Amino acid sequence: MTDSFPVVLTVMAAAALLCRMAGFTLMRFVPLTPRVEAALRATPLAVMSGIVALAVVQGGLAEWLAIGAVVAMTWATGKDVASAMLGVVIVAGLRWMGV
Amino acid sequence: MRAAFTWGGFARGARDGVPLGVSIFAYGLGFGLVAAQAGFGIGKAVLTSAAIYSGSAQLAAMNLLQTGQATLWALFATIMVINARYLLFGAALQPWLWQAGKLRAYGSLLLLGDANWMLTMRMIRAGEMDRAYLAGTGAPVTLGWLAGTALGAAAVSVLPRPEALGFDLMLIAFAASMVTVMTRSRSDLLPVAVGAVTAVAVAQLLGPAPAIIAAGLAGGAVAALGASARA
Image (cartoon, rainbow over all chains, first blue to last red; front, side, top):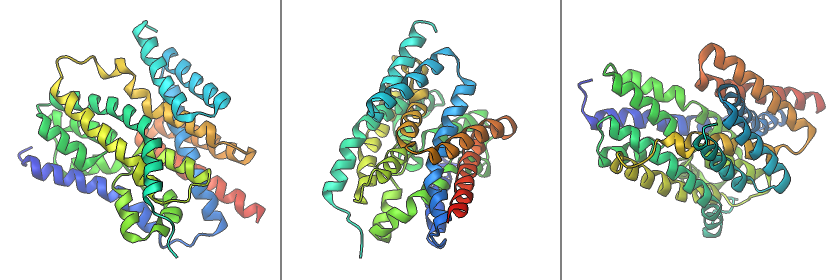
């Protein structure tokens, strides 16, 4: 790697910006039929559930307990952000205890 | 007519985004530590966080840079692959956000991240009408991300390992809580199940970044098929 930092940074920033803008821009030219609307509505659910599923598969007991607690707390209280933050505290605590 | 884009909506988003900002601060600490270990000073680390604004992509890029084998194309491709999920994020936001007008919509996208995308999609589903909400959620996230990066890079020798703070579980915990709260009806369970199964299967073959995109596409596809059957 002989390129200077500004060049490297510009290239990386361009890639990140392209990803941020391209999906949005493409959707401007897709007519919003009921089917497309249903797909867009379902996409966040599938993405988030995919993220969680990968973590469950790769994780151990501390991660399982924390994720389970997040789902249970969100389910019970409806306080999503607070439940998520508590999940982070739980996993940090469990790891600290050596779980 | 343009949709609302008001200071009130921005403030509501910023308030809701504060817990995200706090969590992203811890994530920023993690990136700052990695960047400092790779020989980045505080200035370089913060510039990187500001310009790329994506923790997962930055961590992958730092890994690549540390091999000493990184070419510009390899860096570009790495960030494209890791951040390809933003194509779906932007697409899912488009029908709602576009109504704010071109400049406001694209400006808001600059502040788009994983956590505030999840939060915004959830609030759109709950009836949020003010398009400034997204940018509002981005404000505390940006602050936390840059401050965390700076502190992480500065205090590399003092801080505990980022995993000990649980920062690696942060986005996962947000995803778990948001998906729980957004799953309202029986028909929502299908994309949830398809997303989970697809992600795990594709991750075995191609790794985690393509797995997330495949999950989103598969979940969207089954929902589209279901909608056409009902119509």
